Length: 287
Image (tube, rainbow, N blue to C red; front, side, top):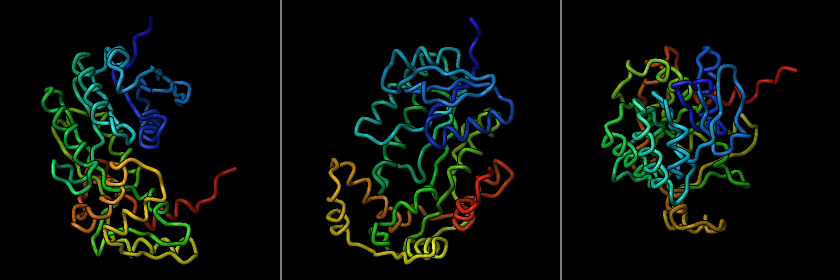
């Protein structure tokens, strides 16, 4: 039986994991892909696909056998995400994984305003407790997501006030991840705040979106009560409402502000601004 690569990448059926896999493949680095749905995984030379679910200890332990360096993309948002992370991390420790590169969140802390940032902090702490070498990539909000914050009426609604966020493109996160995965010893123990080159208010985001898409887009600063009420049109559990609203209150609290410069320090290339990211969305696809 052919030996599997000692570098493993998760999240390959999602954007950050797939972009990271693309970068590793372009660099000629062999790796194994861990996927809950292996049939959806991409195909690369010198790569292998292994079935793996974060919450299934047995499958995770088997998939991680022989892995030295692991790219752990945080699980999809759900009520059991932290439990899934803990199960997967314990399997990684049992399998002898030496270094984990984990996609965390900017300002991760036990008392972070953004509720899901608390889960990221808990995941970081569990990695430390298990004694596994690590690098934490604390991603700010994704530039890729802002256009989907616009309602059907052309309004971004949320209690963000005049707070600023230093949003980052997922492609820039993937570039950092690929670099760290190829040279983990050089980034051992590091925590990188991954941001774009600017920090913007939601009103400024709306202005830029309006300019690029050529239609009226504005920002309405809701009260917290209005924010919860306006989101009740979607049937969701309470933790999800809390996460949606606290995305904006974290901005208002100043917890997503501050340009770090980490993307350029690690990769040697500056990250995309919102204008630059939107320009890439306009580029024609080669036929």
